Image (cartoon, rainbow, N blue to C red):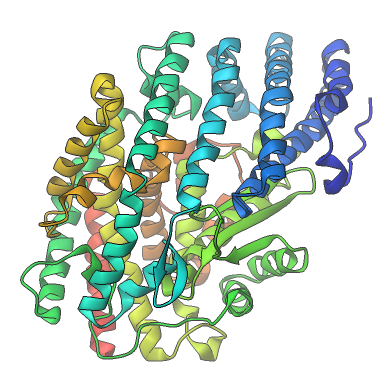
Length: 567
């Protein structure tokens, strides 16, 4: 049965009965070497439509967290369409595996499919539905967190602008107001966490896995590294990065003239210039980003311009919009969509560039014939995004169509590199916390024990921060990282990929054009090769050791010193 692509608007009205005939036809028909390619193409068409429907419904809930119709539409899909899609997809995987046939360029997807088929458990489908609903509930809690500041209602994201203010008392007051508002939802977030945690423990039991971590490892198809590698990476960060951040922090304390460095001291510029103001609104952000992407590579600029024309960007922060930023795929129309929360700070530039890297990766993988080939390990997906953050550095100045003067571009680069260095210890906290939680499930489902563990990890990886007087804010830091709650164990990818992106940057310092070409070539491979091969194609290696990390960190510190000399 030939699949007839509906329009995106029509697709939003689809239910399981609209998909069922196509899946039934695929399951009923004979599968042999002669019709394998056509059968795979037909599966890709219907699966792409189903994937796009899920993503469009989810986007609708995040662009407006109080849209009851959007929430109901997503809930209806998860309860009435998603379970059947999962069951039929499992049967299709089993049919392909039983055939003994392997489509061209499909060796790695076949490996992944075997893992998915082995992990599938029908009893877990309703639990996944419930987990998705709890995730939407958490978005609503976080999306409603606003405060009154200087006569205006501000979101938590908008309050981050205050952290760049030169007046320390103002930074402190704004930070306290925002974080105390978050503490007001402490019980609601704890309750949501415990419900999710218990469900995940049951998911692992149903799948006959000894722990949820082992379930996740197989679910995320982590064939190339282990939990012990993660812990080795934590130790490398403690050995190499923490001392570097301590050095930066001592300079910051001296420049600010403070005895103890508070969280609200981390983001203010240390010079006498005004805070960086890269753009006035989302339209200007788009315009300048388009020019910068074109400087990195003409194809990247063309991709971004197509997203602008087709309304595939929602970048401005507003009330009742879900927190964070993400890129998702509309697989049927072969287009990505970028969601953001821009408020006018340099972090917004980095975030859009990051998400742009994801979007360009998606564009390239859409060229692969089968949807299963487009799935790429998250550890490389994040290289696609983080490497782009580094590759834009030469094009930040206004004379090249970018955001800043020469002076402010130097300040932006310093900010980005310092943020990257500070990120690794924070990533280690997030990842180590999750290993602890699921290794010790009794503690993991006890919010008080979670508070204590997070505080201990803060002391280990961020000893430079003074939390005295703010102990409750310190220990509830795990509340403020939605990955922990909504996508467990999805954070180590950022740390590993940041190291991969750092290696791409080292290459770019030697030869920008060659580094961009290797990076671009790797994006085109999608999931058709192994994770180490993806890194190798991009000019890097998959690494967890202190030596590789040290090379990148040393270069970052040197670049910071070089940029500071320009000021």
